[in-house]
Image (cartoon, rainbow, N blue to C red; front, side, top):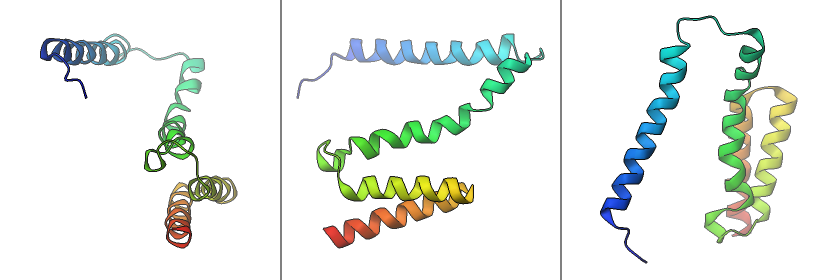
Length: 110
């Protein structure tokens, strides 16, 4: 494995920190004391709902535990979690049933 030059690494870290701070400051500093338009509030309402699937989808489709190859236990757990979430409208129930399905199938299938 090649070692990254420390100057390059710190340049990237500082650049990401400045970019992250700037992005947050735009909303908190410039827009924080003004009312937002209704169309923007309507779209921002779905941001939190999109975060969890965006974090989970790569772990289901390209799991690092299987060297990037999709496998049956992860696909089944995702399907069970999606179904339970749609039927019950309960996030915790979906998370726990998906986790139970994943660990159960990993135990059964090896």
